[in-house]
Image (cartoon, rainbow, N blue to C red):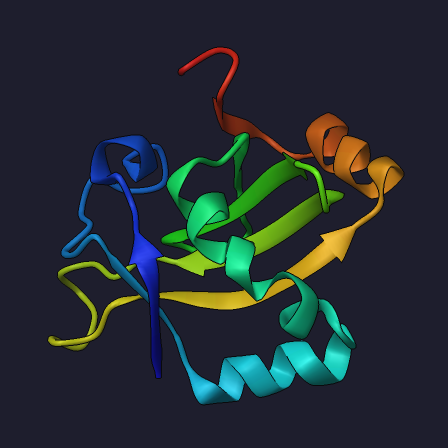
Length: 130
């Protein structure tokens, strides 16, 4: 298990108000899942995970409870990419001692990014500060 950053609980309360910790981890199993299903994404972009969870562009409603679908566009000198990250938030109903956890993480193209914005319920937008 690797620690990958912290969330702003106030920001993520759009998913649930019952968030027990601000710490975020990723398990070895999830890293393996990402490496198998999205080749090279983890190796190339994992350094952006703290930025994605700390400063999301959008938090969208996910079909699973206490789970956020996070979208982030990163543009810097080396990268101009869009990312999707699924984050499971730890609540008081979950096993004590666990943390918020990255379920999956991948690089997505512009059309997929825009499709999510059209078809999913936007709970938070960096532009609107809902």
